[in-house]
Length: 412
Image 1 (cartoon, helix red, strand yellow):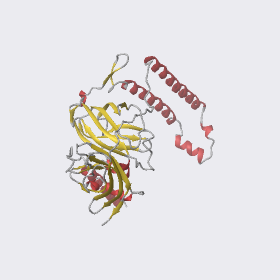
Image 2 (image 1 turned 180 degrees about the vertical axis):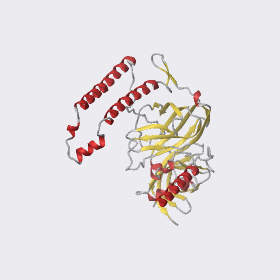
Image 3 (image 1 turned 30 degrees about the horizontal axis):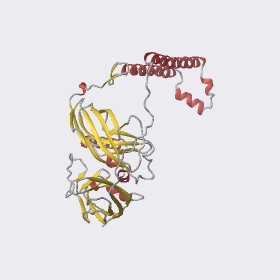
Image 4 (image 1 turned 120 degrees about the vertical axis):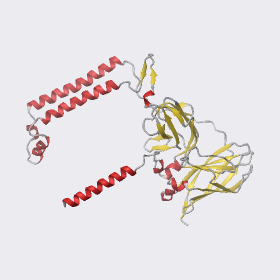
């Protein structure tokens, strides 16, 4: 038996070593792990840009873009019309957020977003830690989690020791937020650790120890109160007075040293809606089918052009994937991991003339459906998909329209 156990331990150690040696570092945030229904039907992100992709420590990075909360928001997911917060997804404290705004409103607090409305956001960051990071905008939705936008690789060069994060208070005092309050925090942590250790150490000196006492009270039926001596009660009273004294003393000390403070902003603000021109295009999704062997998404649409210029589809976007009609719209991937298929959108039906209603069929065919794990949408209980269509007129103006509806998987 000992030899078998030894062999098992050796095999286990070998497997652990292989995992450690063969594992590559995580390169992104695992947004592919989100369910396709959540990615397609939560938030439609577009026009997301970074002011630069190469910067030094202390340089600023501006993240801009637009998003539309989907009208097809899943019923089983907590709504974005409740409470949401604009954030940036990046590994660790690599950047410091200086400012964030949606429709011009500071996003210090949480807010709520209306489904189907357009929002413009801007986030200013300051580079803190050298490295290569996949930076995403995201919306944290209460009780639902993060709704992640498209990511772009950003490289930060320099030395972290050169990072400066200072602010000036209302009284003109300049503070270094990298170290401010650290001494007080360390002192109080050490003090409470000593108090707790003293209380624990006192009971370790008692004979018998804690577990034998517990056994005597439960198995042997002894009265637990009889095991508490007068000295124990005096020690407990001393520790209680000491604890309350430290709390009261700490409160008085902090009030005297920092008489004016501002609490963390936990309120909720209202974000005004943008004034949008009436859309010249009306779209109804008639049929959606995903053919699994060919990784092909076919969508039949009924399109009505209420404008004065012919309209043609130049892009279909869903779940942060972008399928481009290269004959209309030229888009090149920003990097090797940019989820753009630059010539993967095929249109049947041509341009829709002013005043015309026509059926259009689009084909979004690319391996992105599989590599980004979107093919699991066929296992969704309601099998509803959603995305954004971008129409272009003769003057090059773009018109964004959301489409949604049931999807039928094809296995052959």
